[in-house]
Image (cartoon, rainbow, N blue to C red; front, side, top):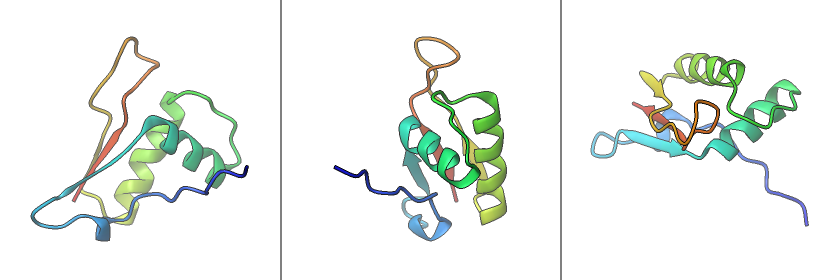
Length: 82
C-alpha cells in the first residue's frame, strides 16, 4: 500500500480563532525528505533548521519544536503559529 504524500502546512490552515497548526514528527521528517531528497529518520538539527526556515518563508510567524521526549533526538511534533 502506498503512503499518501504529506504537504507542508500552509498559513491558510490557521485562523484568528485557531492560530496554531500542528504536524507530527514523522510527517515533518517525511515532508522534509520528500522536498529535499534527504533520507533522515530523526528530527535532526538540519531538518529542524530547514522546517523553521521554510515555514517562515511561507508566512508563519513562528515554528516551534516544543515537546522533547525522552531525549533531544526524539520530538513530539512541530507547531506552526500564524
